Amino acid sequence: MKLDEFAIGQVFHTKSFKLTKENIMGFAEEFDPQYMHLDEEKAKEGRFNGIIASGIHTIAISFKLWIEEGFYGDDIIAGTEMNNFKFIKPVYPDDELHTIVEVLDKQPRKIDTGILTVLLSTYNHKEEQVFEGELSVLIKQ
Image 1 (cartoon, rainbow, N blue to C red):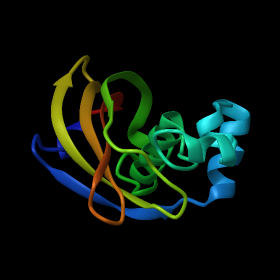
Image 2: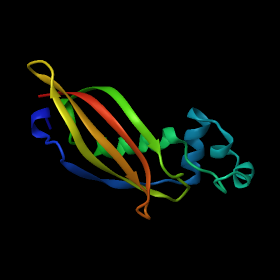
Image 3: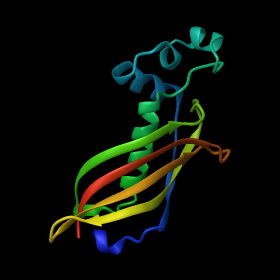
Image 4: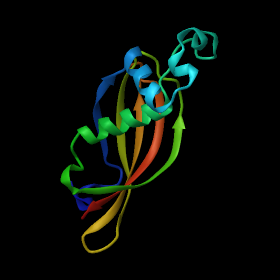
């Protein structure tokens, strides 16, 4: 979709993605090697009572789910900004995440492009919000 096809307040719902312990640990080994993502015994003794997904992993899944819906298609040019990220609840193995995306703003730039800002709100299978963040992209008009 082009910038002009989005409407402020428009809401989209993504499909879901189920995390596994192996998925969480594999991501963490490469991108966020902290004990709460990798060391089951030490994580059990911590405040979360077990392994949790990295916040960076949660962002990546939220973004993946949104992109896979296909609304940007070939009209997206590049990401421009990420703001106001909040990690609201931990994400555990076997959590199934889905994202609700709301169009917050759209600003024409030049004749053929503009900035689209959306709010990504991600929930687990219990409908508990786990993440929220704003994402802006440069997109064709």
